[in-house]
Length: 96
Image (cartoon, rainbow, N blue to C red; front, side, top):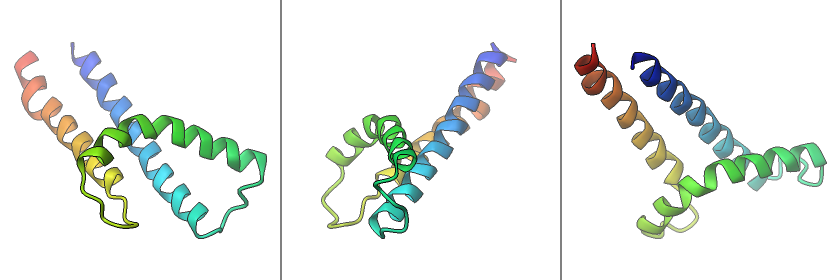
């Protein structure tokens, strides 16, 4: 059972880095730092959008409109941090 908890923790850790990469990519795209017409850049952007948008959309629907500021990645990272802490401080000790 501990292996399952470690696997879930690893998956959440990888998804955390995907969220961070998506946020950085969106900033670079918004400030026109990267070439959006490049196929490789477009494929990375498409992957990051498809990987994160299903998790961001419900959070964006719940949050109030803050103008041009999108805090849904921060909220999602806090949720992931909470789940990881819950796994290691509450669930894992009960199984050991």
